[in-house]
Structure formats: C-alpha cells, structure tokens
Image (spheres, rainbow, N blue to C red):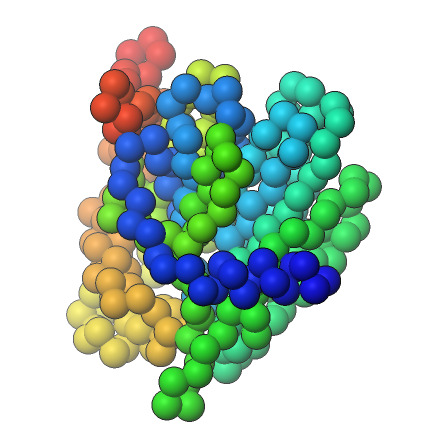
Length: 288
C-alpha cells in the first residue's frame, strides 16, 4: 500500500502537461479505448475533466495492451468486465506479465459521489477472476485539496504513453473528433462503449440513437449558475469551460433530436483514422 501511496504523491506533485493532438486518442466520459505498443497510429490515450469521475487505466505488462476509460459511476458493475474483456481481446494476454490497474480522480465532494465510485471500482476489480495489481491509487481523499473551505480535485486529467507505460498529469486542447456528438451520447445516458479498433487502427463513432433531451429549450435559457448547479455533480469544482461545454452539447441535442437519420446516414458508423501528421481524418464508411 505504501508504494501505491508514494506513486499517488509523485503523480500529484507533477506539473500538468499539455498534450497535443498528434498520436492522441482522447477518451470522453463513458468511453473506453484499448490498444497496444504495436499500434502505428495511436501512442497516447488520455482523458480529463474528471471531477467526481475516475479515470481508469488497466495494462498488461506482458503484451503492453492498455485500456483507458472515464467512469462516472453510472454502471460500474457492467463497466469493469468490459475493461477486462477489452484487455483480454489482445493476443498473448496469457503470456508472462501481470495486469496492473491505475485509478485516478474524484475528491472529497459534498455528496460523497467520489467515495462511492472509488468503492465500486475497487470492489468490482476485486471480484474479477484474474489477479489485478493495484499500482496507482490517486482517488477521492488522496486527490483532494481544500481552498477557502471548499474541496477540489488536484488531478483532473491523465495520459498514458502506450509505448513506455508512463502515466502523467495531462490536459488536452483537442477532445475530438466529433466531440459534441460523443458528449451528447453521454449526456443522454448512453452506456460505456469501446470507441477504437486497434486491429484496423480506426476510431469508430456510432451509430448512436437517443430520445430528444427533455426541456432542452428551458435549459438553454438558464444562466451559467443554474446550469452549473443543476447539471454538474460538483458545481464548485468544475473546470472553467464546463458550462460552455454543456451549452454546446445541449445546442447539439436540440439540433439533432433523433440522430439516426441526420448524423449517421444509412445508419453507418463514422470512421476516423490518423493521417501522416498524426491527426484524425474522416474516412468514408464501408460501402458508401
């Protein structure tokens, strides 16, 4: 445990690195992505904007398969097996090496949502048949700072380098592709899904469906304070762009009340691949 606490202390003490879009696969809330060092397109997995949410990295030290996911506690029981299966889908996962888990995020929030999520994740990983070694635990009270009697997370985001296995504090300018579409899916209650196919090195979005967001016009008329207080799990601790992000997501939902026809013609997924500059580029869907 001491080693785990020491790793948390070192992680908290790092300065935040700005991660550029080259070679990055950004993972939004309720998404998971998994790949290995053999990937020629993606070298970094990352996620941020976690307040009460936790970012989970699971890695196999033998084949280097690495999964990063952004969990919000909506269905931890179903999500942990998804993470496990994602890692096990890689060849050589039985070879020598071990499964290592890293949990980062949350803080001492008023509603104790962080504590609840920490306990859920730890107990679900504990229930898995495989041996999982907890290497980094920087969650809830271990990720908490106090200022003027209010609590905040210390770390909001992390990245993992697939090739070196290094995990570090990070923030991201580019949260795409299709940032609003992906955020809309999470806001309307979509479950955890895998967004990347490491075999084809393609990011796969959709096809998604959702029902029109209730009272979307009402929410769009509210001021920042109302949006923050009603649509955040931790209003005081949100990053500065939170309200703007929610507004743009609501606008997107208003514009696309039923996405199947407008956003996914022919009900086909949107496919993206990294170009020579290491940036995402849309590729036409098969058979279109």
